[in-house]
Each structure stands twice: as structure tokens, then as C-alpha cells.
Length: 217
Image 1 (tube, rainbow, N blue to C red):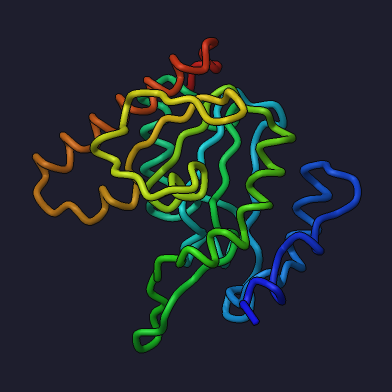
Image 2 (cartoon, helix red, strand yellow):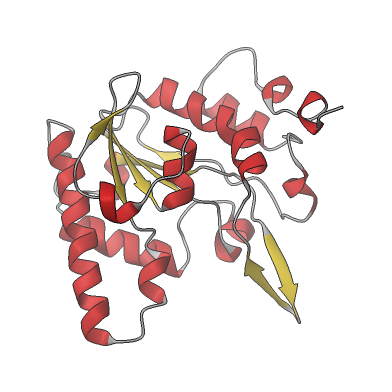
């Protein structure tokens, strides 16, 4: 029989939906096999009624160990870009499409491995409930995995970035790169240009929200 008949995250949802209860329930999620090699579930965090929700792919090595989203090198780039876009991170809600760190060992190092469609779909219920509770005006999809989870289809960032589109529930969606992509650009000129484009995408999302969040200090 299809694998989906046996594994789903739905039975792990709490009866009462609040962010703290969702976070607690997600810690015990066995909706797919990623929990077996991860240190812990990394749930979303931030303002309970944020105008902006940022959705990444999955936690990385640092996030897996800390239990918090975007606290590693990519998170530092995100923090800087948010500040340059005039957005205070504490006024946003930051999460990931997949809540466990998928990786493979290379010697003693744990290297990121992209989640597959099955894993994205199994974890989607947690992201949907985060959206239901936070009710953001605009969601920023950081990378193709996040965009795939939010739209249900494969998207091309270059074709979608900076132009808000409307999801089925009326929420605006802005698609941009994942900040980790900037870490892989070796040429400094290219990296600065890509960073400026990333900040411009964040500004577009802020504008699409209709009311700008508080300025970062």
C-alpha cells in the first residue's frame, strides 16, 4: 500500500491550537523519518500576530542544535537584510517548511540535504497551522522548497521574485532566495549585488503587507 497510508503528521496535532501547544506537539512528531537523525524539532518563533512570516527550507546544523530557526550563518545574513529593509525581526514570525534537519554525514560533518516532496508534504500541516494562528498579511518564501510548500507546485525564483502573488486564502506571497545562497557566492561584486536584490525583495514584501512593521534599530 502507499507509504502515505501509514505516515502522516496529522495525528500529532494538539486538540487546542496555539503556537506554544503546536510547538510542544511538533517536538514529538513522527510524521516522516527525518526525526530519527535530527537532534530535535525546530519550530517557528516570533510575533504571534506578525504582518510578515518568513518561511525557509529546513533548519540547518546550528538550528538543529539550538532548537531555533535561522541562528546560524544564513540567519545572520537574514538579520542584516531585514535591518537594511527596515524590518525588525522581532516583529516577524520566522519558520521553515520542514521542521527537522535533513543531512548526510561527510566524515564528522553533517551536510545539508534538500528535503524531498514527500517530506515537504508530511510537514506541511505544521506550517499551515502556523499560518492559521499568526495570520500574516504577507509571507516571504525563502527559496524553492518554501515556495513549493506554500504553492503546491515547483516555482522558478527568477520568474516570481519581488512581485507579490495572492494565495488561496488571500495572503500575499513574495518569493526570494534563501539567504544561504549568498554564502555560496565567491565573487564579492556578485555577492553584494545579490544581497541588494535580496533586501529589495524584503522591502517589496513589507510594502505588500500594507502596513510597514516597526523599523529595525
